[in-house]
Amino acid sequence: MAYNPYDQVSYRTFPRRQTHPNRLAAVARLFGMQPAPVACCRVLELGCGDGGNLLPLAYHLPGSRFLGIDLAEQPVAAARRASAALSIGNLDLRVADLRDLVPGDGEFDYILAHGLYSWIPAEVRDALLAVCRERLSPNGVAFVSYNAYPGRYPRRMLREILLQHIHGIGGPAARIAAARRLLAQLPGEEAAALLEQGDDILFHDDLAPINHALWFHEFAAHAGRHALQYLGEADPHEMFDPREIPARDVLEREQYLDFLKLRRFRQTLLCRAEVRLTREIDAHCMDQFLFSENPHGRRVAGSDPVVEAVAQALRDTSPLPVEFAELIPYAGSCEALREILFALMIGGCVDLHVYDFPCEEAVTERPRASRLARYQAAAGGNVTNACHIPVELDEIARRLLILLDGTRTVGQLARDLAAHPAAPTRKEILRHLPDSLDWLARMALLEA
Image (spheres, rainbow, N blue to C red):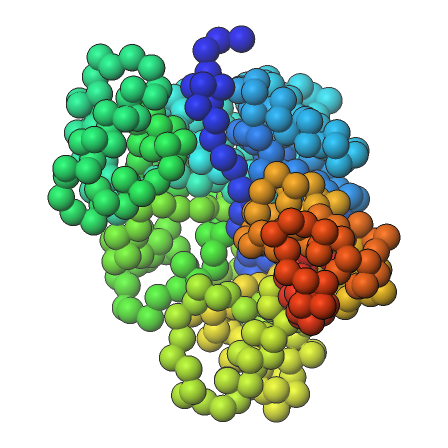
């Protein structure tokens, strides 16, 4: 196997809820498609790395089939070790080129390519979209992220400065150190933001030999040459804007949105060109979804008590989604709820779902955290919940979660926690333990 920089400098991968089949299926349904059921689908991830995104998907969707490929041997080996430790039987991990898929691999309902398109040669970018066309099922959805203009121009300038500065310097560590020394002297928020990135991101994203940004219309045209069409964005609110936009069709509108937002990165969804999409959507389509709060959305609170009641109901159950029917009492009527949820959706304040993530929402007599979360907690404080969202744990919560294997009562948990040298007294632990367990349940980290 040829030298691979990802074997030299490990690149951390994380769960991205925008890549979850639930999200891809929700956007597809929004525009009139009938995507494959989330609980029994086929998923391909190109550039899976160490499995930080794919492993949790396979664990929490045991009825679906997953294939991950990557050129770097060491990250794939790490993913295989984790998969074996968790006894995940529906996941195949390979060291392979995306052009080496075999006919026996069949079609996939969802294809994921995050952080790949902009960092591979032109001929491989072409092959990536060819794979999407050839391997997508008739109602399949592909996720492709990439660097976009015009927002990428400031980072491109810094990249070119850094590449000139480190030219001739050998070895990843020396190149990273030299780049950081220069970045620390450069003015501006962009240089400061780049300096705060981890070494893996700096090295693989901005110091990489290839970092190809392009205009949205160029990406859409490239997809079109492979008989793929633009479906939408993985974050639906990114497709809406109250400003008047001089556009004749959806593609021109999306390009103008990039102008207005100075967008630098896209998470675009594609489908087969022959699929008929419904572009005229309104509040009446909200009945078919489940909803959860998007904590990153911006909304002026307190303007309408009915809207506030719906928003609070979503906040109370976050991160788990709520069915449309359960929210009707807060809005007073179906019609009012449709309008409220549609407005919250286009404002980025709610996420759409077509799948109700299974987890244990109550603390049982002998609570049990997911095997995945316990495995991750043994290595550090970042774990993945049932909704495919990272959850950061403090040290006490981390130690507690590791103990939640379903064999201990609350009293036994307090006893074992108190045995740690730096732990509070058992009495103090018992006072706070119920709240801690409730929090872990609310974070969708417990399983039945």
